[in-house]
Length: 432
Image 1 (cartoon, one colour):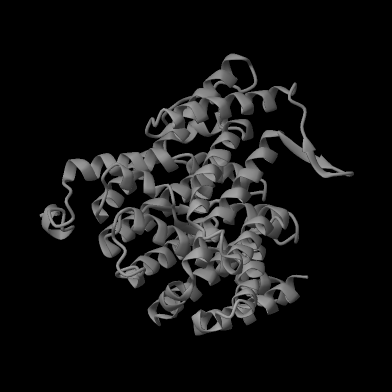
Image 2: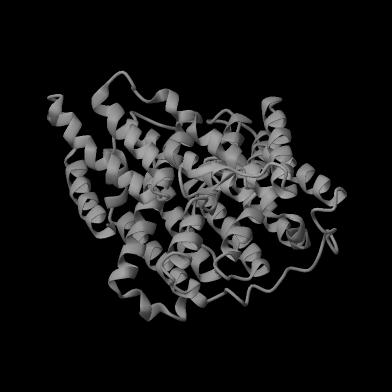
């Protein structure tokens, strides 16, 4: 039955391979269960409730992706998007986290409309491959930068903007140790190396007295009440100029983050056909539904995970891989007591390594063609410098038609890219 529904034989896989692939994907992205609550707690949200919301959003989104779209891709609250939510929207703009959740909900609803109308799929297929690769790499740099900050390895400096931190600080030293251990595990190609690196770092932190011993390992599922439904409480407050900018940012970032991830993972799995994603509308709808569900539960934007490529590398080719990953996220609901040992020093190495994985697409950018190298570089570098994924996308996509025209390649620019460039120019003006 499973073999027939997921076309396992046709795809050259079997149930055992799909299970191992699902396990590999889960281990590669299990860090989000602890990192996401840690980041959103900075916005004043309840860590236990966010843990449950994170796991449930991953379960629901990944099941829809596996059963409906039949792609070996897992979903969970996105890195970069949660940082924008906590540090920019709530921390920078002073917007209540409940209202910020409303913004995520609205962006998800808009995505559903765009997906059902076919607009979202058309735009993704219209974006040049080089820019898709640049978006993924830029997000990787941004996430790594956040990791260095959280570890205290990089700190603010009034003279140079940034500088090296104090390596004699206990938590910073623990983070550096964790980074070294994680790098070794990844280099040795140990599946779930990022997750195991977190475990080892947390254990060492407990041994040296930097982290308190957890009260338990297993426990009952915490209440999601502190965050559940809060997206509807201040829903009326989203209809302001400031929130419009926030919603547009959620839209832009999730749109292109998902596009890059879907294309990258599908290409690695050999599922791409003529540079287009088969059944893209179903995969995009799964992503949209996951965002709406996640917002209702109480977490930032849920999106497709590039770590799904780890499962594909282990042989995953069908939606059954995603189904197994979803089941493992459901089991993780009973491990919430471990949240207390997952500090910023423990999660920072994971962020840095995820960044390394995401910038691997740099090698495929045509750097010898200046007309595509310039917009790609601007997309990548502006994300960490402006501390905004959306800004990086806007700058790079604005320059693309300029450099292509200057090179005499204007006819190669898709019509939708012209429209996107206008939108991004307006976005940058509004942002400034």
